[in-house]
Length: 169
Image (cartoon, rainbow, N blue to C red; front, side):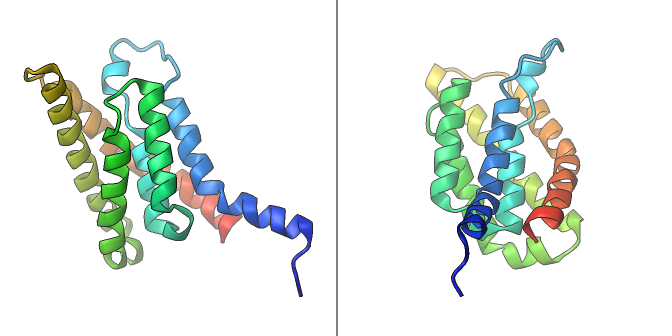
């Protein structure tokens, strides 16, 4: 029996959910918050969302989608063009290679995997920014951003997990 048009639309929208979540979180990074200095240490919401969906639904978060999200993020934020797509593709390769460990164990194991990803991203962004400017930048803001990203991951993961259980499963 072939699915009806509404069933096809429903399936398409469900399949686009992880991409949409990542896009929304990426947009939220651009909102000007009234907290002094937050822009320098704003947590990387796109990295958190992309990691969560790649661990839990890699079929709905292909490399091409991550590349597109990363490119759009770099264009929106004015960051080094190519850093976020490269990071997201490397993150996906890491997650896919370690998925049996990350997806089927306790949340703490997945969180430790995210700690590795966020730390590598922080080091890559600091190194690339320093290389582009031809001088070493102070790594403190990048370290705080990585720590804030790591600390907030459980909250966002819980929110997205609830959504996943209600909508996608």
